Length: 197
Image (cartoon, rainbow, N blue to C red; front, side, top):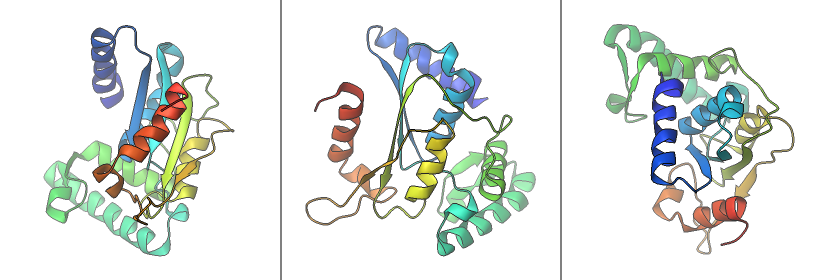
């Protein structure tokens, strides 16, 4: 299980390597969904986890998406429902989207797309900790602002999504392109975590 095994293992490794550092989850896209689930289900049991940073991570619930992206999401959920029982995994690498993923993970994601419900009982906040910062990227069609805000709202009110706009040359950060030039995002994250550049 990703929450109980992999994420807890990552936290243990971080504690071992950086015993004095404040811990933070930085979740992009599906990683943000996992970070939100962890905060909702395990946040109070993880007092040293101080920050939850969501970058281009939003609820893929169909009503929150633009028409074109909603059509693509419907197609993708149909592919997930047909292919995962046959193949035992979702072969996004064959489709050019998402890579190879576990069938359970992708069926849960498909349910989130269709019904807007997170796995493990559709948990919602408010949470006391960690502190939350959500960033939406201009030009991101996979996680538009309403989608990012909907995911942040699961953690309680008052977590307004901040928009990262175009850079000085007019390039939009989008869902993936911000990773090619991550400096502006890194500065925004540092401001939220440390209060300075």
